[in-house]
Length: 519
Ligand code: XMP
View 1 (cartoon, helix red, strand yellow):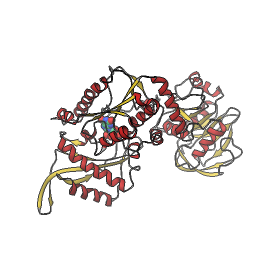
View 2: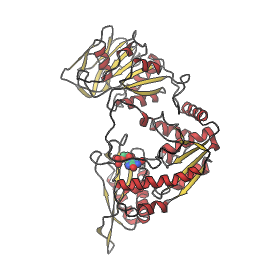
View 3: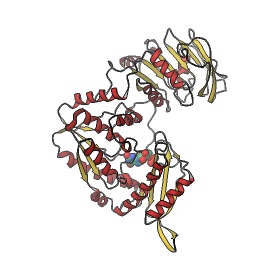
View 4: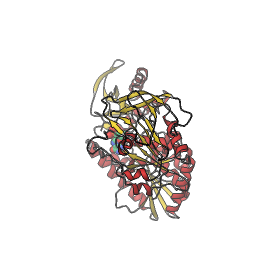
């Protein structure tokens, strides 16, 4: 499906990825300034850049030195396209290096908060910036001389050319990171570059995103029937709501109830989609068959495989019943499709989503979230009137509670864990911590027992582990520093209210070396 926004309505900023994690953050900041952005690898040719008809190009930071062999570079013809270019950190060093300035190994890098002093007239800074300000630095080499014909417009103690520009060539460079929150005036500077220097139109808003996608979906689907598998998560929910807005009764959703969802989740899915949004929903009640398939399985990867296979066997007949369906909705997001210069990270777990369907199902895909970042998906969901609990739902693994029961998965164990998990989520919500914490949940050590005492009675029950992590993208995570009072409350409520649990422990492992889930 072509989901690229219409160039009549949106200007495109290309963010060239020079490695590490900077490009995505820059692309998101550009969109926060209401301009559409796309990430491209640094191996892109000038002709390919031109084919995108970009309104501006931003070079991201990166972890390398321009002086090492194999340092990422860019086709130098890009500088002659006449499109405004804005280099950030490594990007600025590369501009200086390629256009004849000087990048030196001074032996004195700058890291963290640094004082920046502006000097002289600058198109990039305009007239509203304080002459002295704090910026966030993270570099080892320094730009010691700007290329000929460029004006130096700011300096820091260790970087004589911390900002340089050529208005004539429409090329600008900053040694620091305007995209990070630690540079207080950074977003204003980025906005000024986009709106005033590069003349990008600020049309990338939630309303226009929805309108564009609705139109694209209508064009793709025509009068045909569309199927959408709902997982209970935010991506499939927003994708379904968008498609419903576009083609209404042509959409049928399928929700496979695995018996491994959290407390109240299945009801909420049915309630939201069937009752409130008026979407036709096939609710496949398959819990018994999932539990049957899981008998005797304890290995995490075997569990994932069993659950994934069972899911397909439940989904297929439901979809086959809609024999006229030609299209299948998928909640693919922009980070999943970015072709970046960075090699794939090693896979630790087989994250085949429940909902990942076999290739031989003959549907054409509808992917209305393909251009969006997660925060944009959430805002689109809010705009479409989906309830907060769905829009702000934390990531939840496809195999559900199955990978949070350590040991064999049985209905009784799933019930125990569901109760403990509900208490954890309720208390975190009451403490107002929902949005600060990336994921928080309970894990049941079903094969472990320990001795305890309640009243005068000896107990011999299972431990529950509480896992709460902060993270930006689940690639790395830190354990959340939950207040002791909250942990105390969680512990006493779980032990008092969930029979069979007599011990609660808090997981203080970050990722790496741990993973977020226990299996
Ligand atoms: P880990 O445990 O690898 O998890 O640190 C990273 C993120 O992925 C989620 N996760 C899964 N999601 N199917 C999924 O759809 C899976 O099998 C699966 N395993 C882990 C996890 O909740 C976290 O957000």
